[in-house]
Image (cartoon, rainbow, N blue to C red):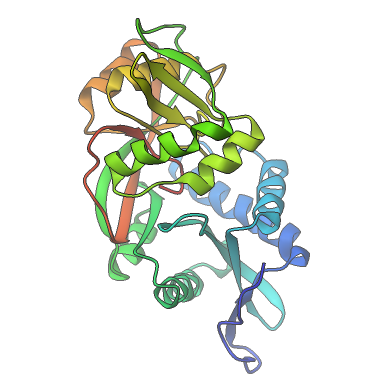
Length: 297
């Protein structure tokens, strides 16, 4: 991961933003879990990362994956927070952004986000997106002040995947030769593709597609908090959701304005755990089809 230092050497006692390295992994992972656990406990919601073991795995994975960038905020050599950016496709996805509970309300989150946005402006990214936990009002206020627009309320749903099949829709594992068709589909629905993510998901054997006689009509990089899906119709999404063995992580993120999809999930035994908010800067097209975001966007 090659990231230019974003602040010069800082005088003692001041905050510095620099690139994350593998040596930062354990510290960033601990802050990642502690920050989410503290805010969730305060509001009596489930902690979004399931365990400290998961955050260690996730941070090490991001630090080792081409296309992810990590930044850390430190003062006098102590790491106080971090921010990660998914740059595998044209639209940058931000998250997680976490600050140690002991360092919150000291401008650390703002400094990290300012550095992230400066990097994406320099990179000339056409758009930047994130998913914000709705009950965390301070982050909602911060992102709004920094120029993010609220685009979509999201419902986080969890439960046992419904055992259903949709006539005419066949679901199978995605293959490398599906990438072009899936990219065209995503571009038609969102105005851009997410083939970098999809390629990695195919290699990880988590991606699947839904086919009708005319061809691929939907795909999912996986089914859970860390993956996204796009489809021509809600029925294609029903088929994908019905093919899941489980919903990984806190659940699936469902655009709340898609009433048909939300009602179908509820009628099939899923329950709403909490609300989240999709926020964007720059390029955004109102989706022209059915979709599920990941925790990034």
